[in-house]
Length: 304
Image (tube, rainbow, N blue to C red; front, side, top):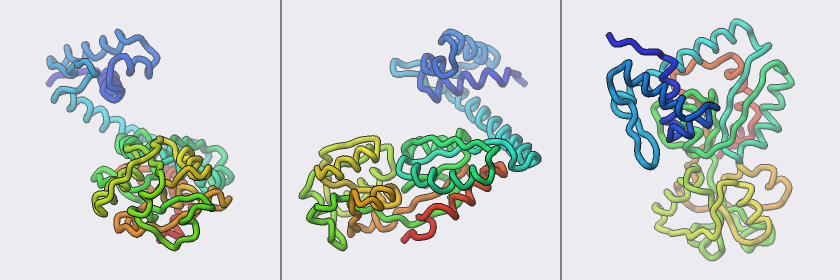
């Protein structure tokens, strides 16, 4: 049986994850030739090509994909082992890694993170903000233990630990003609300039699904990767946007904007989910943090 050095698999993994040898080297803090050397040595050990190099970057060969799958499995086993070690230490030290959409960050900080830190000051919390696609990838590949995401796609490698119905709403200025309306439609919203999130977000993917279902085409006047930009667009009365109220609880409480229900079946069925990788052994700290999220986030108690 052919043997190889496990440590070299990481260089292959980073090259594929980052899209190029140069990007992997920048992430690892080494020169590109060092990454190429380790991948080449791994190819020599196995007697097979592991990477295909194109002008736009690198992609794994069939053999390379096998090594990547192996590396992910080994990393997952290591995470599970460390979680069990944390269990022996209790909740006096350790860490919890969380990935979330921008709209959930403020409520996480005000609620679950604040309460968790008060009770477990020795445990550090990492909170990183990404779009839906990246949140799913990071949880699936064990780069994060917990994810909080809106309208996630189905994935057999992901388990929802908690879910809450959170319909999409039209977000308007308090002086907008729709501000006091009980509900509206996508067709009605075409009367005003609209700002939308970019396509890597579940919110935008849901909007596109609703457009198809309702046979409506929205032409955004503004697109952005930040919810805060969309809120500023609405708060300055330049137009409307589409967001779930759970993503803008602070702005709604301050009266900066209003949320109006939209008569669209896809919008009414949308959920926010608290997710982990299927089969992952979570540390006691991560399990406890999950409980704080379920108990401390308003959406899990008032979801429609």
